[in-house]
Image (cartoon, rainbow, N blue to C red):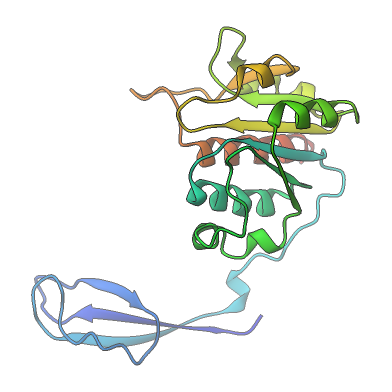
Length: 218
């Protein structure tokens, strides 16, 4: 991979030294936005050797995901990016979940919407029933009376294809969908908050489902 040029500005005020990246060497910013002193333009180089090559995990479990009425296009975009990184086979976008035709998705997916196969469905319950009939085990991230720690059950989902379900930011996963699940799990929380942002929880679960067996093997 060729070297990459990076451009920074740094404040010349010794008591400030505010430093930040700029898109190009032709930046129009001349004065520090923090203290008003002049900025120094700095050009740096990042070598391609700093980038890890894409790795194939052919033996990793098959994982697809279903997004049940996610409201935020930004959350959907972030989920696309995590799905691309983790190598998920497909995303099923259900109900009001925005599709990549929504331009806001691209702001957080950064092109991943073009690499991850996806399909749009009107009814999540019907879609889960159809996928379950093809041999997938169904796992939802949700807090309920049936929920247990995600990390205590992830091993159970290594042998069969898994459909990972995440739900609406306010109402969660449709109760009718939960009735179809083989397991319901929550991400353990150690602080004052009860849950993570849906895209963050998705990323944790997707990577763990795909690679936990690989980690143990190493």
